[in-house]
Image (cartoon, rainbow, N blue to C red; front, side):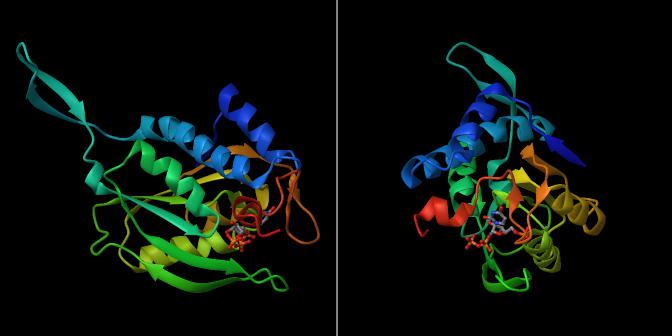
Length: 207
Ligand code: PRP
Ligand code: URA
C-alpha cells in the first residue's frame, strides 16, 4: 500500500525543499516540519485504547496511544532529520538507528551501523528516510528489521520514485509506504526526478 499525502501545507513546504536555493539550515527545519505534519496523517491508522481517567470534575473515558510501543527508526544519515519531526509528535517513542549508504558506483546499499531497542515484537516501527529512489537502501533496512524480529513496520519518506515503490511493494507487501510526493522517476545516476537532490548532503551541509 502506498499513500501520497495530499495536504497544501506539506506541498508548500515541499516546494521550498525542492528549490535548490534553500539553504541547509532551512532545509533541515523543513524536513522536520514535513515529517511532523505527515505523522498526523499516518497516525489516523493507529489503534487507540480506551481508558478511564479523572478530570478535575468527573471521570471519563478517553482514547490513548501507548507511545512506548512505538520505535522510530531513521535510516542514517538523512532519516535523522525526519526522526526529529516524528519524535516531536511521539516523544515517548524509543529511537533505533540503521546506518546504510548507497554505493555511488553500484547503487547497492552498504550497512555500517545498527542499534535497536531489545525485543521488537509487538512494537510499531516507524522507519524514516526522506528519499525512496531505487528502494535498495530502504528495502535492505526493512529486511534487517524483520530479521531482528520486527513484525509491524511503517515506512515514511518525503519523495518516492515509482521504482522504489515497486521494489518495496513487491519485497515487503506487508509494509505501508507514506510519501509526501511520488515523483516521475530516476536519472542515470539513480537520483529522483524532479526530486530535491541529495537529501543527506542538503540536510547536513556536506555538498
Ligand atoms: C540516500 C537516501 C536513501 C538512499 C535512497 O542516502 O537518504 O537512504 O540514498 O536511494 P535508494 O532508494 O536508491 O537506495 P545516501 O546513500 O545518500 O546516504 P546519506 O543518508 O548518508 O546521505
Ligand atoms: N538519494 C538522495 O538523497 N536523493 C536522490 O534523489 C536519490 C537518492
